[in-house]
Length: 398
Image 1: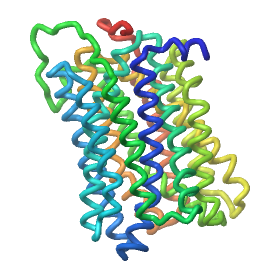
Image 2 (image 1 turned 90 degrees about the horizontal axis):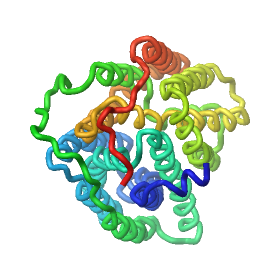
Image 3 (image 1 turned 180 degrees about the vertical axis):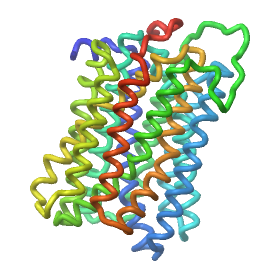
Image 4 (image 1 turned 135 degrees about the horizontal axis):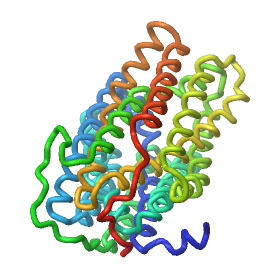
């Protein structure tokens, strides 16, 4: 495994390091935004919900647009550079915001940056490795991303504990932003086979194989039951976890996902990818049942959240590798745009439905809905989506 990781192409290593540094900055800022809004700008939860909803929606729509444009122009590097650059500059500017509108502008810019880079970056990963390395490459990338999600909150906590003000901690995010830009500019544009006639874009996805369209439908069903992770932390607090332990609990999830993402995703290069996704979604369904029925026993939350990290490790990279398996290379940017659009856009309705079920009935009802969506999606993936085959015009490693 270590030898296989060391032999990954230069581009995969660069993108992994970029994600590590970028997510260290992002997750250093993200938990501070609610504190800054409430304690400095005196804004309430409604403002926070509006800001995050608008920002995530804007980013999700752009993921499809830039994926299509990356395929049309045969250029992915500069979308990646622009996306990381915009997000990196927007985060520290929150420190200068004097109203919730200012925070909204910065958060929208941050998510716009993510929307610009995500689909082209995923296509770049797929183009940089051989088909039998896709699971390893996407798993390694997710591992680096999750390590950044561990480092960021710990860095923010350490800086605040040292006496640094909230504003100054936000400004510190400019340092990793500069590092990300330096690394992103070192990326090389991958070579592609010329396409005689570009395939026209269509909203009904007719340019894609039927199995890819079915995969997106099944993924959408799963995502409808995959609400914001904030509900898991809210449930943990409801079950008796202390305020101080909440960020540590989420750091545990990121750490488990970081450690296991590479080996589990690499396993999908040797066995059927569907099996890992089905297994991960089944773990999700089981855990959501437990979260809904669990008595007030805070100690049980630690192994459950660790198991949630296993679910993330078994699915995040493998789902993307399966996208690359199901589509031709010249449509990889558009395919990842559709994938990321569905994953991002359904977060809002999923969270609204979950919150309504929680408030109207009970937490157990909301978690049961999420569990049912995951189970039905797993069954459909097994019986309706045939095993993914590597795309016939798959790229060779560069």
